[in-house]
Amino acid sequence: HVNGNVCLYSMKEHEDVYNMASGRREHVGVIGVWNPFTADESYARSVTFTSKESLHGHKHAVVVGGGNGEVWVNDIYPEYEESNTGEVFVDEYVQKFEPNHVGPVISLCSRPEGLIVSVGHDGMLRMTQTWIGLKN
Image (cartoon, rainbow, N blue to C red):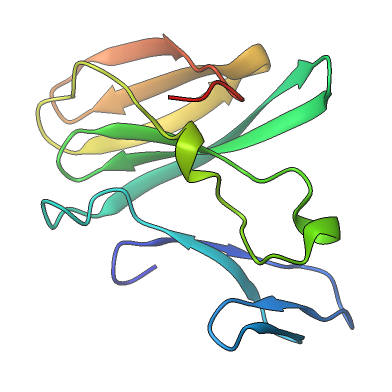
């Protein structure tokens, strides 16, 4: 998004979804907004999704690389459609990868079982295992 947020949109046609702004179900595209970089005024530069099979079904997460070199992961609430709460991201499951890249994250991709590959402006290619569904 132009302000650096990660926005999730519903691609379903003719279906109402929970509008976080109004607090009711209506036909809108945006179903979730997240920006882990608000404290230092950075922005989301690269985004990918990852998933992992677990004992409780398939778990999904969004991975965000920032202009400041940070890489963050946030689980996507699995019962979003059924819950009607409007919560898409699960804040207690946020993870930050360490160490940061030096400079912006240029590219991200996900591999099976939560493995993330990140490439930074520093020329480093990093492979990191995410722990989708693990509370911090």
